[in-house]
Length: 617
Image (cartoon, rainbow, N blue to C red; front, side, top):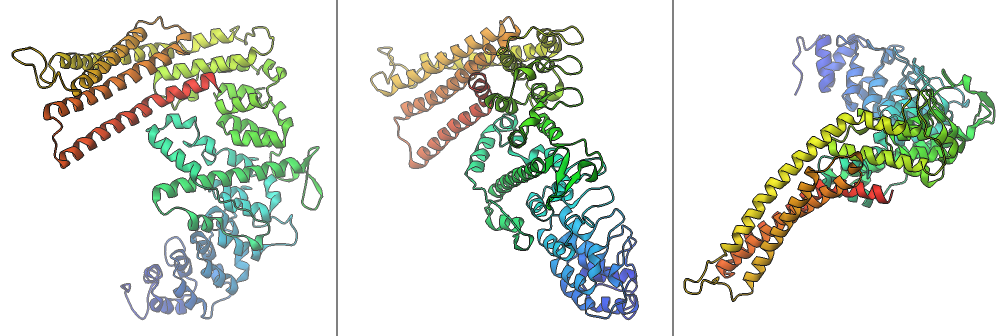
């Protein structure tokens, strides 16, 4: 639809903006011939800014074929962005090529915060645009970083990592490998930024066995996990910039069409690309650092102080500490593989990697350290600046450690087993019982900091036991009554059940008796939990075990009650159903059984996983 204008022969700025928004060439031509570089809105955008932002390729091509004032395309809006910046933002590659052909120096123009079009290509994940601009801006001097940084020191590699465009970040590393060492004004490297995003790795998402337990519906999470492992990883490799393919396009071409599977596919590709990028950054830094000096591509040493501010912080050892806090075990493994000396590092609070794993309850990190023999007697004996051992840190309860668990009793059980697991490490060496600067042992600190949580856990256990006992009593009453009010009734003369001579009646009694038996099991487990002494050690094995017994017998009693009801229907109707009735009955039964199984998995899976950790991890 053609834009409505005030004067067809003399359009004003507002008319030009509307025409640029819609791509109306005729109106734009008239405006351009009169005011080629005038702003069309309050933000200072020219018609080229608007056309590029809306990707009106045909309109902008026609205008660019006209004669233009010198530096006409270099006009900037209120943010200092040229029209090329806007074309880069939306990935309008043909428009960008035409603009650069018309005004080649555009590729070097910066906005008010020092961002070049190349920086924007990295920040917005425009891979093909990045390849084009990189070829236009490439320099024979590999140390020439003009256009690769903005005013705050952030590089194009930082920008790609912040946007989670890890495929593009790998390309950037292939072209500018020394950016692995570059730091922004706060001394942050790209690797540090990457590790600050634990959700970019599988260990930080619901696709890990630990985080799976905290999802809202575990059966669905298990289904997604199965799909996740079945999806192949499309390995992406690159060597030279000129030969690079677009990993985003590869992903779009190969991802499943169904949105549910497509989302899982994208997550897996992101996790693998992030891990590949982390490996490359770690390997680059570890291979290039010798005696405090980095070795560039030409073999020329340059000191860390020459690559940006705060070069003595956020090193690979600091990254190891950060990865441990987040529980990003993939990064921890890779750093210790490439830089085994980093295991000796301590942070500003004199905490080593074992301290941090214990403090933040990072199960996978501890399991990895134990399996590879990284935990030495020296690490175990070390204390932080408050004289806390790793066992003290594991003993001290802090809210952030178990913030994903909302059931107090389960939280108390996890805290108890974590304390015992860390204590097992200490049992391997003969050490005296340490006290911290407050004069407390680890056991005393555990009891003191867990008082409130233990009180809340006792309340929850008693409430859950009460609920279980009430429901199981109702189910038991129903099945006990059914044992004497048999389907079909009794013979008036003999007093025996009418269906006494059929095989279906004993089956009915078997189902009903099984339901009654499991109800008694639920009552027994619930009563045992309710009248427990609630010692701290009870939360380690006995309460989780009673929870499994009560929950399992509860579900089994419900299932057998349903099967007894179905058997009773078969008895009183003599199994004479129409095809439709059979289909409906079978569908209802299957739906009920599946519902019970799914709900059982959702409720009981965390406890079974807890026992796996107790006995096998």
